[in-house]
Image (cartoon, rainbow, N blue to C red; front, top):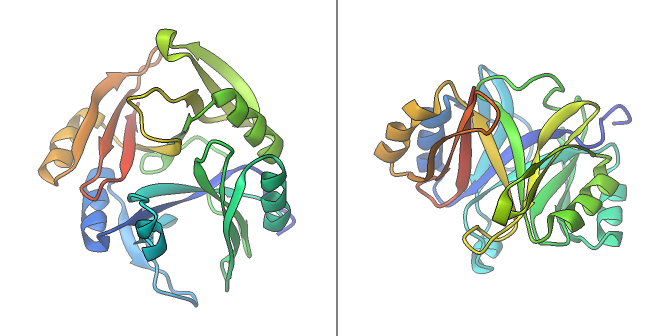
Length: 255
């Protein structure tokens, strides 16, 4: 659609090895409901936040499993012309893994940045999901790129989606944490990975009422706490990092 914004995070998809287990986990941890997609095409389960679809969950494809891909979250980023975005991504040193059209949903391209982090560019056939206001509880509140080289990644994404730098944080031996956004709204941050971090990927933060209360829920359901609740420097909020029972990394955020 011509009125689709360029560069908005608009959908969040979990690729997993256990559909029922993943639904049980995130319904309890984040408070989402799940629903069956009513459109054409293969069966698809949506994540709903207070009745509004914000993402989906599907089986990790067999070819991805064969290639060694673990369960993971995949952010969708909106574009008014997905084919032009895919071609530009390739020119900028990224990779185009897959393109497809879904009736009543739109056209999408699964892409990777030059460091290998995977995301989906999405041209919706109707209104673009998401919004530009402050994130509500149950929505993704922060989008963090664990990168092979944050400066190279910044060059790629700012050119591709028109994102702008906001603030920077010096993390000492861990280098620079560069925050970014669009039209005055801060979306997240990016950093160069260290040896103890996963390979380059997008890391999504879900907003919950209280991350401290989430710890027991996560552990009782078979998840793993990687980083216990941690105060955000200079802010009143807290975050934690975890791994769900199927092996996908995620983060929680509360104000």
